[in-house]
View 1 (tube, chains in turn green, cyan):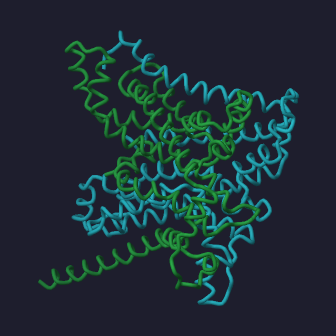
View 2 (cartoon, helix red, strand yellow; view 1 turned 60 degrees about the vertical axis):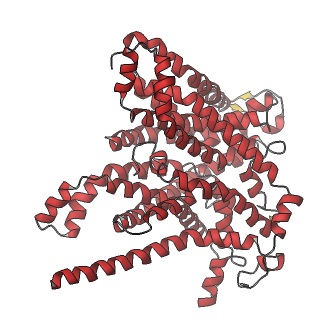
View 3 (cartoon, chains in turn yellow, orange; view 1 turned 90 degrees about the vertical axis):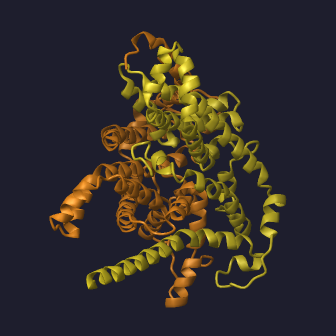
Length: 281
Length: 292
């Protein structure tokens, strides 16, 4: 009886400890984010003084980033590029993933890894030839060049991860369809694709985020006609100085997809970022 | 699966991707390879490249700044990844039990992974700024000392590592948590019945069983950190001096700030080879091993 009582008290202590650790963890993660969001509502004279806590919230920083240096163009551009690049990667990559998951052929695993090396390569090694080639073609500072550049890392990622999702589907279903006289392409279109749709949505969202958060290609390959949000945000603090209030407002805007997609991606993020090696819950 | 007569379908499914990868991957790779044997400056618009053989590579081999930045890259990558692994493991062990709010925690905690690193860098540069920042101000109001994080090389590097930890700790934590949850129950029950201590269970059962997951998480995060660019650009711009200059940042400077394209190409390729060798030798093996 007494031992049961002890363990009850013990579990209460453990519970308390868990909530203390949790609060600390969430504090460390969210204090910086919340501070940025608070600062974005501060009037000009308070922004530079961390010790001032009382102030009247103002929208002046948001007015600045919508009227003086409009952020909607970069937001729209980034959305167009991220959306196109992830859809293109899914459209091209899913059939390739299917081939790598379902057919046995010589050099298959080497081919799959070769594809992945493009994801692994440092972007700086590809941005040099991209710049020179597309400059010669007169295609710098277009959606086209940035979508292609982002596809270079998103396509390998999609192929590698979709292969994992396709492998999860029992292949007996596909085989019975083959026996029923479906061609391989019909099997892929009518059996596999519908089954793997949730995986495609998750992988597409991850590819979208990778493109949304990308910086180096965007910095070098585009400038005025197409402007990535990360380039826009980074331009608020340069050697020329810092425009602090509007910068925090711009950072806040750049975090919005993260806040939205966190809910949908929490079940897929472990699998996604480990390239399928570790299964999330 | 016996599908030999269907080989033509393999080509049908693979061809579009392979074409794109050849155009945006393989062609640029050979382009930069050829460029690395030439001298060419961006300011020479249109003029031909000058063939210099292996001169660019010879120059790099003797160039201290290149190897110093390679070392910086490794210090940053190994330092941050190790720190994240240790804290992540402790957190995962501690929180791998049922408690209320677990689902919400899992959702909230991935947010740093989805924010642009550029925003994270600027956010922390602001928070750590000696005059404008929240953290030096809090510290000063308790101790009277003004902290400046970016004035010496070692504190600047440490700050970068801590910022990276803020971003990537959730990754380590969640991967290790997923690893812990997938472990079989029987060894733990058997050890418990045999009267093993908590430490013994951790040392001889949890750790060995969790090792493939730890290895793959460590290596993948290391690979990503070896490419670090955004944080350096936004937080320290390689300074003070060149103390936090990483390879990505150095190559960027050489090519798009000083316009030495040929030399930059050689630097970038050497850097890429190092990463690919690392990936082929370690990461490939770890990926296969972790999946079982």
